[in-house]
Image (cartoon, rainbow, N blue to C red; front, top):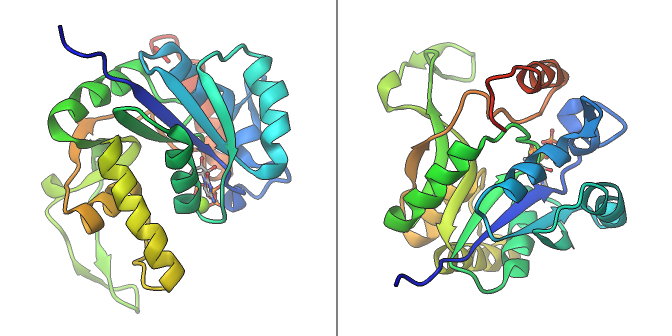
Length: 240
Ligand code: CTP
Ligand code: MG
């Protein structure tokens, strides 16, 4: 019989949400009466993932424990740990807190509308590809521009995908990648990092495989995303 593989979700909620321009951090703003973070935790609670590490601001750990995890009975949340200044600090803290497991799914807590099918596709795909990411094909034409905002290149759209989360990796691979990033951050030689697949590419020479995500899997970032988010939650066909 195949050994049971253990999957840990690291859910990130330690950002300040500056682009939302609100007093309350965006992951704690309410949609249909529940905090944004409730929806992303609920998705992993319902999924086949084995356990969840929640990463949040030091000052918000108690709030998350009582007002979200205990209130809604999220039994898979094993630890609530403090994040850091940048997203990659929070990810590294989450990976270290995850301890022993086979696979790690890194998810933006602000992507509240992640669906079960996308999570399952990623969990399946990582077993073959070691690194994979939920993503969708670009619908618009994308331009590369110069300093004067003149379009100078039009990349072939069929080669462009929008990267979402979860970003999913073999635990040892992502641990090694982030350990190297942490060392280079200390020395001041680290590259500018925007997501986890990039860290795996840069340090482990490992390309993540695209897994079909969903156009509903938006990241709550600016105020108009709250309007879109409410519409997504209120449409009956969406299995969240
Ligand atoms: N995040 C985190 N730790 C940080 C920064 C971000 O855990 N230091 C989390 C956010 O809480 C969010 C996810 O990473 O769930 C994606 O980041 P982003 O959308 O950029 O959120 P913020 O950094 O909070 O927003 P902004 O960039 O507008 O300040
Ligand atoms: Mg940010």
